[in-house]
Figure 1 (cartoon, chains in turn red, purple):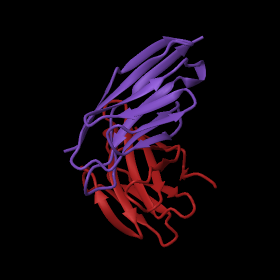
Figure 2 (figure 1 turned 90 degrees about the vertical axis):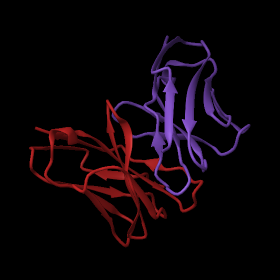
Figure 3 (figure 1 turned 30 degrees about the horizontal axis):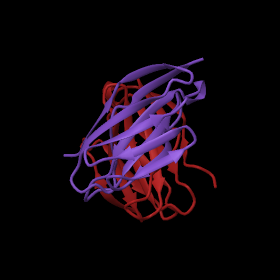
Figure 4 (figure 1 turned 180 degrees about the vertical axis):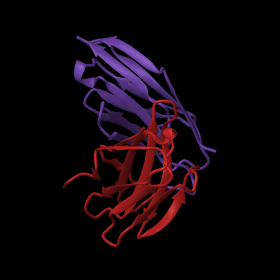
Length: 113
Length: 110
């Protein structure tokens, strides 16, 4: 099975712009979660989608949003970018079931100039 | 609020020198404790899931154990290819999002 695929791998933006990141989950996985990873804060949960509905949300401002499509692919959008948004954004998918592990993609490295 | 603390932050070992990494946690209604390995420039790679105190899982040179307050990742006779950052995460009641510790950066010197 192919793993979780994230595109693009690298992105450079300037303050005030917006960005959309894409994630294709493992085939058959309907749950997709997004995380932000920074050296200072580590991995922090952004949100989770299941069957096109946001099921959980972490403590991030409303500038961070996402959606999921009927084929389980997901996108994450960040508007009005700030310097502090520079990070590795990771997507993870899992099979349904609370005890299933999440499987991660290799992330999108976002740099804000 | 779920919390995970990992120690040490960094560890340097000689090849063959066994050691343990610690993950202390507080969570309401543990629905799983997860260990991941992360290499530079890559996403976390799943290693183990533990659900209840007393449970143990093994894979090659790695063994994970769980108590009601902490988990240990034991590394036996490590090799240089075991060098990576090891992450611990918990899933608590009511949410499927994981709460991660900041990781232990492990270096195995030949």
